[in-house]
Every structure is written in structure tokens, then in C-alpha cells.
Image (tube, rainbow, N blue to C red; front, side, top):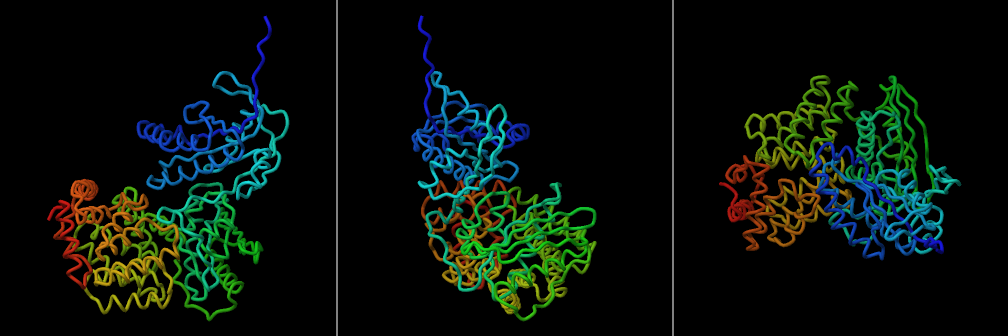
Length: 580
């Protein structure tokens, strides 16, 4: 009998695998399987069909795909990563499902519906090399797509892969990340008139995960220091941290954020010393404007921050008038604890628990360093959130918040964040002249403080100036293109105050803010539109997470100069079935 001929063909092979699948299964098997099944049905299968591919087989947490061309395979893989990223936005960081993807163009052996051979094996080895959220490709894929798709590649050089005879030249795909919800389809942001800069999250080189807090704190403090300079346009912290841990071309980041300059660096903290490397990049011209390495005692960290800030300002705008010195902590232990606490304050997952944990940490920080202004201002905001969001509704928390905010301003009257926090709390005390004075001081110190603009927008909305409130939040979104979800909460509130209920529903249903306490405004908006069943469902979901909410308490507490606006909210809440 004649020997059966082996069938072969050239194919673009994609292998994808879920990062940390075993950990996810161990923590919550049922939820992990449900998310995985949903992603395969709603994301993977439609993408593969749309790009003319087929699912060869599913292997637990992995999948083997075949496409008729390298371009189809690459386009499908990028869309898959983007849609996985979008779907992860509503999950806590620990529960996010990330993919590693490898793509190879090669000869494969066909056995029924299955595929074998080095073409498949190389794709699998590339997948195992890739970092979470990345796509690694062989030279064959890169050569096929480089003139057909608007992509850049990081050359990782030849790699020896397990059970593959010859080294394989490997490239990392530098694709633009998916647009933040609410910005999809918008054109690239225009460059501001001022020199514009974003500080990317510094890389932790300490080899210890617990030092991530220190490295993140260093990044945040540099952003704060640069923002105090009126000659610069500085992107807010939340938007730059959207790129943490991702390998994205700096040109694409700059285009996405609408800035010309990027600061990137790394830090290593060990044995009482800190080593910091920084470089300032002109993302438009492609030049490195300045780079320096600092190797200092840990106690000198704040001096290093000042040096870096001064060098950047000098490089971009020349020497400016010196600014008042910041209130620096006298204890590194207090600083570390404060950084941990402030990272929890705007958390949307397990919101009440995050706020309670932040209260413990920040109380520890101020007990260690009783003159640490930043720790006092964040602690003031924590006590206000406990009261305002019906987590722990006591007058003691309310009065304590104001007391702590005054303490923070007394310790550092030149801290813009301290001034707007005090101004915001004073508005809830109906002390309008004092509140206005504090916000005016904040904007004098830092005209483009994104968070302050959004909080001022809330007060404008409750004063009957809804159009101004919307404009203020839009300004903040330019400074913070990838914002925390509460920006959209405040924007939805402003649209509700303006009577623009359809727009409010659209905004408040964004994944970035939907599962927060903004659901009560969503419920009211739906009720005002006559969509009663939807409104009552959202109201019930809101009450499940905030059982202490009462309309009467809310109405009395609001910082409203225009009571007609408050009554508009009260009417919507009652129509949605929220309790009086």
C-alpha cells in the first residue's frame, strides 16, 4: 500500500496563554472559568472569524489559532490584546486576565483539524517568552507586516528556543494601546502651547515587589513637583500609570497623551541607599535631551527629586522663579506608609474596605511624623469619604475631616492639593467665601491641577452653573486623558444637573465608573427618561453596596447654593425607588 503523503502548508500561527491562570483558579475557580468562557465567546471567537482565522484547539488556559496571512494574524492578535485590556478595566488588578501571545510564520503539518511541526512549536516558545500583555513575533512575521501595518518593533535579537535547532530572531510588537473608554474614535490630542510632559512610572529594579510602592511614590512626587511650575503642561498621575508594566513605544505614548516630552527612569532601593536613573526624551524629535544617574543615601531622596525637577524645568523652559519649598516628611517610614495610604483613596474596587485601610495607614503616618502635611490632607479626605459616602455616617468623622484639612494647610499653605481639599470640605459646611478662597489659592499655586478642576466642577454644578461644570471636567480630562473613574462620575453629575439625562446615562454606564456609587445618579437619569425598570434595577444594585444611603441625609449634606438642583436629584432618586 502506498505510503500516505503528509499534508503541509504555510500558515501564520498564533499561540495565546493566560498569565497566572493557576493562581486565578486557586483564588476563585468558578469566577475564573466564567470570565474565561465569556472572553472566548464574546472576544476571541468574533475576532478570529473577523480576521479569517480559525481556532485550531483550546488547551486549558491557552489557545492555538491559524490565520491565512501574517497581516491577518497580527491584526487579530492586536485586537485581542486591546479588547482584553478593555474588559479588564472593571476588574481589580489581582483578577485581571492578561495574555501572552506568540506569532510565527512557518511550515506546519496538517493532521485532520490539528496542526503540528516547528511552525507551531516556535509560536508556542515565543508565547512563553512574552511579557504579560505583550506580543512576540518571529522575523518572518515582522518582515511580512512591517510595510503593511503602522507598527513598530523592539528588536530582541536571536533567541535559543527549547527543542528548536536554530536560534530564532525575536521582535516585540509596539502597538498603540486601546483608547480609554469615552475617548474611542477621537483624533490624536493636539500639543499644548506650553512645553508638555508626562512622567512614566519608574521601573523598580530592587528585585522586591514591596519596593513598587516606593518607586510609584517617587514617580507621583515628581509629577507633583513638575505640576507646580506654571510654565509646564504636565499630565496627571493616573494617565501615565495606565502604561505601567507595558512595553509601548514612547512616540505612541506621547501621541496618546498629547505631549512632546516624556520622562522615564528606574530606581533601586537597598541597604539604606537609592540609585535612580532618569532620562528626558523629546518624543517628537526622537532625541534624548538629558540623562543622569543618582546614587545617594536614602535620606537624600527628596533632594534628588528637587534636582530632577529643576533640571527638567531648566531643559524645557529655562530657569523660572524659585517656588516655595514643599513640606517634606521627616521620616521615611511615614513617607512609605503615606504612599501606601494615598494609593487606596480613589480605589473603586472594595471601596469601603480600601477607605478604612487608608484611614489606618494615614493615622500611622501622622503619628510617626506629626508635621507631615500631605499625610494630614489625605487623612482629612478619608474621614470626609467615610461620612459623605455613607460608609460611617457620624458627625465626628465630618468635623474631624475639616480639622485635619485645616491642619494640613497650616503645615503647608503652598500645597495646592491641601488648599482644594480644604476648600471642598468647607463647601460641605456651607462656608462659601472660605471655600472659594481656598480653591482660588489652589489654582493660583497650580492652575492646571486636574483633580481640583473636577472637584470645583461639582461645586459649580450644585451652584446652578452646569455648563461651566462640564467645561471644567473637559479641561481636567485633557490633563488626565486616562483618568480615574470618578472623573466620569462628576461629568455625569454635571450633565444630570444640566438636564441632559441621555448624556448622563451614556457617561455613567462607562466601565470606568459604572460599578461605583455613581449608580445612584445613573438610576435617577434613567428614571427621568421614563425607563423605570432599568432605574429601579440600578437603584437596587447601588443599595446593595451602600445600604446606609438615605435621600434625606444626602440632600441635607450637599454643597448646594442652588436648591433647585438638589431637588432635581431628589426627584430622580425618589422616582428610581431609593429610600427617603
